[in-house]
Image 1 (cartoon, one colour):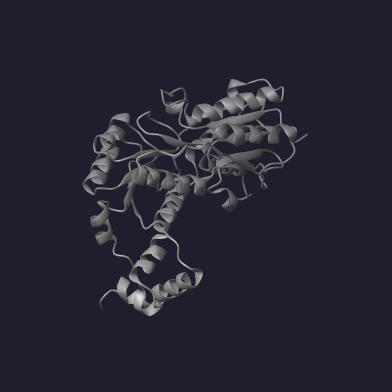
Image 2 (image 1 turned 60 degrees about the horizontal axis):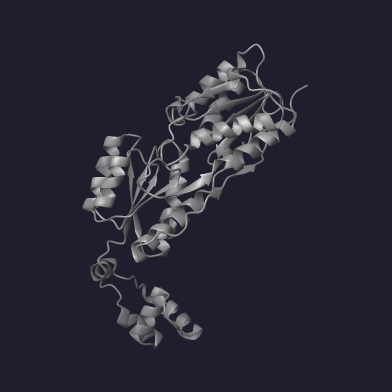
Length: 349
């Protein structure tokens, strides 16, 4: 069966092909009546623009590469990729995903694939190697980092981790908690900020310390634990969160609250608390970070929500601007925010 053509749409709508083109491109004036007829005709005959022909005319592939980390393990990356793809589809683009699993060699292979496919731009959630990212610049392909800046070789749309983390600490302190433990991210990323700025892990740890100080609480190194976000146990919970929580519960004076900087870490904490015969939040409160698994855990997890939809959509629009104009728009600092659910409560007396 032959595909519908632009001319067939024009004939059915009773307008010129130029009018159809203006409606499809959302450029130029078209009366509301004519626009409605064109949209009805497109729907009725199932017209779809020929992306290949469009690409040949404009020397574009209408494909965006998206380099991801740990997509199978951490739903944060899946969510950002989903919203970037939704925005891409709205603009007539498709996305090509590649998962590097945190390995520079895999990232390089993915970038080589992107270059071979002639993608128009690349999104990174999150980059591993500055040298790899510079391969894209050498090929004339714009690149953008999402959520965090791991390399000075590409601009970034970042999240303000500090505001949400401070809200989490203030929430716990306001509930009367005085021994607040911190289970943070990958220890290999702490203190590894370069010319791209401090790492996400640095920011969340600093906010923990600032939150303690604001509440007049002393820092206790026994309550500070660092673990990789993505390590899973056989049950599917975060094994690092589980392991560190068991150690925290074994302290002579255990914490009354835990701030875990990833929902996966928080899931492991919940499992360890449950196995210890303790109740959340009656005996111990737990806060996560990301808002990926939070609403589906038991109890529903209080967490710091990351703006995953905004990251994906704004990220795509930024690379589209780079493709079409050769310039980058201002990169906003997107806010994180505390979402209160059922895993936090007053400190036990």
